[in-house]
Image 1 (tube, one colour):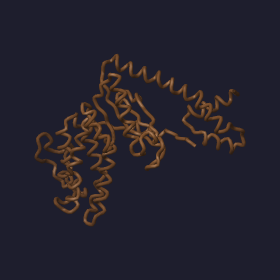
Image 2 (cartoon, one colour; image 1 turned 45 degrees about the horizontal axis):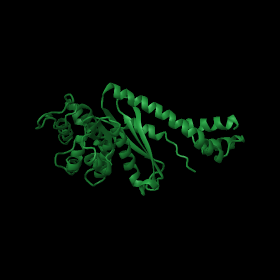
Image 3 (tube, one colour; image 1 turned 120 degrees about the vertical axis):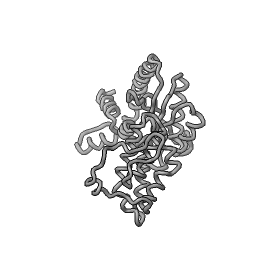
Image 4 (cartoon, helix red, strand yellow; image 1 turned 180 degrees about the vertical axis):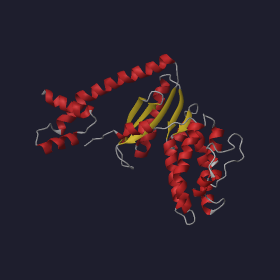
Amino acid sequence: MPVGNLLVSAATLFSGQTFTHLSQFSEFLNMKFISHTTFNKIQREYLNAVVKHTWSLLQKAELDKIKQQGTSFRLAGDGRCDSPGFSAKYCTYSLLDIETQHIVMFVVVKVTETGSSSKMEVEGFRRCMTYLLDQGFTIEVLATDRHVQIRSIMKKEFSNVDHQFDVWHLCKSLKKKLTGKAKSKGCEDLNFWIKAICNHLWWCASNCEGDKVLLEESWLSICDHIVNTHTFEGKIFKQCAHTFIPTDVAAKKKWLVRESKAHKALKEVVLDKRLRKDICQLSEFCHTGNLEVYHSLFHFDYK
């Protein structure tokens, strides 16, 4: 085999690029390049084996380190499909160790294995969890998005694991609901508070120190704060944590009027039973941001 064919194929794959990108680059440069058939053959017969071997060594070293330390896993999980919507052919589900920020497990699921694109992420999640548990590891915390099927599986099959939700995904959902409410007539003033309310949720999750009661009470306090009331009844959280707001500063803020249409719309969102239940699953302040970044670097080229 010409050494250039092997090195070009390896450089393309290992740099995270696709054959299509490099082929177009060469075409514009008027430079001869290997064919897609050659690239696929080299990748299939040589490069994939190297990647698999290297990953196995790295994964083993990471898992052996955890075993030696005798600690349990605190993981973040998320899936990435090769295309959006319900036309995806492949889905990669990964588990990230929150403490070390290293990927400790991932699987690739093909749609033909599940019969539906919507089931691939769930299947990938189950395989990752089952593998680690079968290896004798203890999973203390797992953070995911609010995937309905994964939520159900966690309750039925992995109930001994503390299932946490990703703060960013919950904030995204909260912002969407508040934006929808603010579009209603008489609720326009709610627009000025949406960013602050989302920031408040982050603050609540990051400062609750694992106390779900404190987390929920501090979250509910936004209904009083937003009408310029900063002391309230509660078991733990009885007043806002911010410093005293001077009168001249308070006069410039667009406070809502208690029980106004905008305030009632806010309470409909904040006091929603499902949201309050889900917010309690933010007590460990986990987020899958780095895992999202990792998945954003994926390139799929299955042509």
